[in-house]
Amino acid sequence: MAVSEDILRIVTAYAERGGAKKVTHVYLVIGELSSFVDDSIQFYFNLLTPGTIVEGAELHFERIKTRFRCRKCGHEFEPEERNWMCPKCRALGGDVIAGKEFYVDSIEIATLEAS
Amino acid sequence: MSENPSGPSRVTVVERLLTANEEVASDNRAEFRAHGVKVINIMASPGAGKTTLLLSTIRALPHERLGVIEGDVASQVDADRIATTGTPVVQINTGGACHLDAPMIRHSMKALPLDNLELIFVENVGNLICPVSFDLGQDFNVGLISVPEGHDKPYKYPAIFEAVDLVIVTKSDLLPYLDFEVDTFRDLVHGLNPEVPVLVLSAKTGDGMDAWINWLEDKLPHQERLA
Image (cartoon, each protein chain N blue to C red):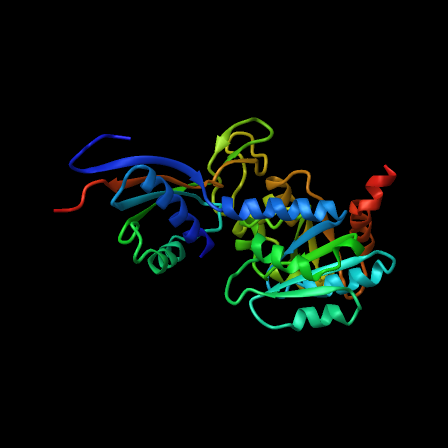
């Protein structure tokens, strides 16, 4: 719920600044490691947006896969579900360099009333 | 932003979510610091033994001024258990939210005698996923995993193991009866978070509790004043 409220707040601020009459699309970037589920964001979004300029906007979710940087050899790789070994040197795990993203990337707005 | 007078325009945003929560968490942090209180956020699955560990911890630190903030979807059961020790405790009922957030802490901290406390434990809602993303204003994060849950939890819930300052394996008294491999678990945790200490203990038998108490005592505010 808090996440959807945040999305609404951010989107409304940018839309108003852009002179929007309506927001048609909201593009979200969500890393695999962030704890947010597309369905629940969509659910709360649908609850919160009626009556706002964001009502009816389509939510788009770009999922970023987790990536490690091996601490031993520096190789960057996408870990498998139950295998975190570096494909180059077989060290276990690494520093998380992708997968924690969680932001509103962009929105699409309509600046004229639909005729 | 593309200019298209008769059609839609794309507006670049790139704004992180939950900044509103982070702002309140920042205020909480400042408030706790102003009162000289350290705050430890305890996260784990339901039934991992958070409350039981807290009860044993309170008994093991009789001279420290402790407080507890309990988080559950509903009921006062955990707060009632803590209250039997005489420790100041406040219960937050989230009414459905699967995690505590900074505004909830901001509200509940007012019910604790902050001027008289050194250390506050926040027992988060039982959940290995959502609490990680919500800063509360705490100083340290501790993640619990109980022996019955299995040693492959880091594969399934990597975010929490990466985020915590301490990992505790609870219910170690059950190790002889289950297939939990402590070394495998340690390796997986260190694959994500190489410096994090991994303790193994049983709040029930007291085995391994010393290491936890030592870790805590090291974090107490008066230790910093001595240093």
